[in-house]
Length: 113
Image (cartoon, rainbow, N blue to C red):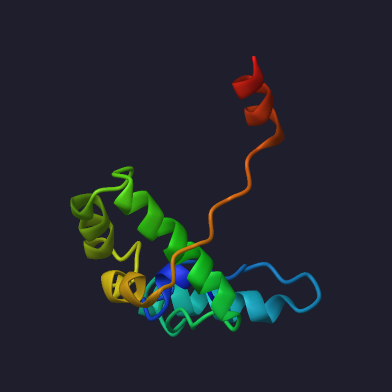
């Protein structure tokens, strides 16, 4: 319920409908789905309680867009399909850049060779 890239979007997963300890709970969940639809009454994704998670994800997304690995068109398409929150560009603007990653130990060996 707290995916940084889905904050505010409708929930798109279904809770389990099998409860061995109390089978009537499963009946209620199944009836909810049949009567009101697949995701009825499940609400929206909430903001992640750890802001660092959001900063990390959107920092990586910003880096990928700056390097051309993800296009603006691709991201807008994902937003239209509700796979990514609709304010992703605004969130990326206010997200600080990630610090450079330390060099991988094997990359130093490749340079030496």
